[in-house]
Amino acid sequence: MSVAVPVLGTRVAAISFAEAVSWLSAAAHAGRRAHVACANVFSVVMARDRPEYASCLTGADLIVPDGMPIVWALRMLGHRAERVHGDDLLLAFCRTFPTIRHFLMGGAPGQPEQVADSLRSMIPGMCIAGTHPTPVRPVPAPAHRRAVAKIQDSGAQIVWVGMGTPAQDYWIATALQDISAPMVGVGSAFDLLSGRTRATPEWMKKTGTQWLFRLAQEPQRLWRRYLAYNPRFVALLARQIVDERLRGRSE
Image 1 (cartoon, rainbow, N blue to C red):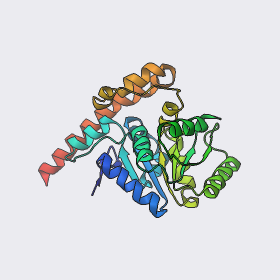
Image 2: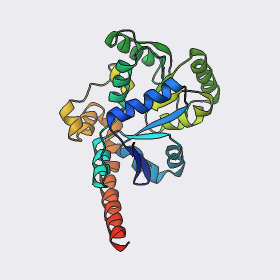
Image 3: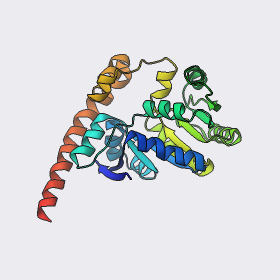
Image 4: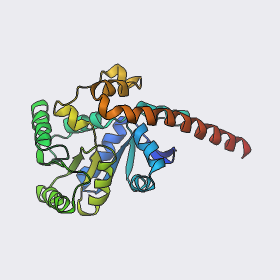
């Protein structure tokens, strides 16, 4: 059983990859509405800066450690955890449960269809219940209503939302009351599966240097994010660990 551990104020599940897949399977097969967020350095630092985004994450049913820095933070805080990256979670879940009804929400026009084609070519018997792009974010109200109706009509049992952070979490929080299925924010998975970006080598994932690989592919879009957020994460986490240890000594 996982526990939720505050990492810079965001309660991240100290969980294994297998436990995350199992949790998601139970929710999908039960038809349970749920918001699953993937926490990385960018999202947990942003949550400190934006109260409205922190509130959105607080309402999530499960927040998994998406990046190795978050996993290391959980371990330094005394908990066992494994990396549950959105790309890997989507692929592992689809390979394990290809015949349940998957819906792909997000991306540029034509992109979710490319993701669907990629999944069908990789996974025999892959069931894609439907797709819907989101070229404008935040999603305008009329487009939001159309998307929700499309998901409901499809009979989707799980919805993969590829809008990027924070747009995907805001959208899931808004749509949650209308959709009886788990929705998972998977960010970069749509770019990967549609061929817009390349897969990160496993050794870079394990060593926490995936951000360098992504920066090399999209320097104009990502350089400000990593320059601003990575050093702040290190400093804020160090302060949290020191504060917790001092508090522990005084108790």
